[in-house]
Length: 82
Image (cartoon, rainbow, N blue to C red; front, side, top):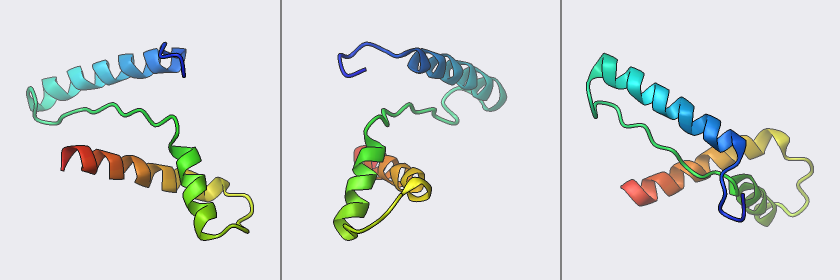
């Protein structure tokens, strides 16, 4: 949430990530495959802004937003982790 508290979905996601990490570690060994969590709350809005900056007349963007938002998450990840 904007106030810094965690939403119910965040808690569910953290629990899933923990279980996934345990399964990966059991199968491949500790630290063999790192699991990262990323705050993606505003990536769809940023993706829409980027698309509309390129094409102000763009109509509905449902199909494009998810792919562009995923690209933004990767950009930030690579920016932080090289």
